[in-house]
Length: 188
Image (tube, rainbow, N blue to C red):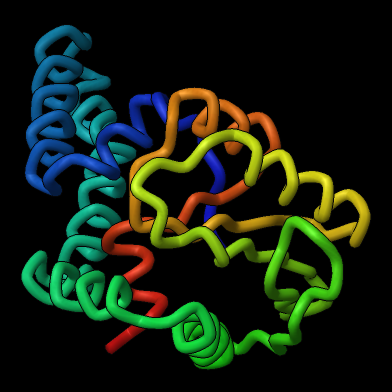
């Protein structure tokens, strides 16, 4: 289960930053609060940076678990050399390792239907090798999500997304899986 937050919120930005930045912010907020509070409240003020400390711990854990950049590059290189069928099979295996039940999706706009804990996820994988991805494929996935009454959708891509595609993904609640996250899903 993941926590959803605004992409440009302070906590989201700190989660994407190096872990030690959150610790510096926590220390600065704590020291500032101690300096500004009256004497009886100084011990409590020291804990005012605690949320930033927690975010720093979360960022450190994520960064510790993340694959090395060289491993990500090797995995994405292997994915680029794969046929559509092999790539789809690798994605299915990755989803099954994460506890999903995976079946092919019969309609247009998506390739796979994954289910876990009664939650349906549709995945669009067939254009993963394109150098640039436009909004059309994301609109198709969003339409498939509505038709299948899927709770969420994911679009897998090796290349860049156009600005319109990024907006379409954000507006449609579609998770774009690229780079390290794609390499982690493929897991080879």
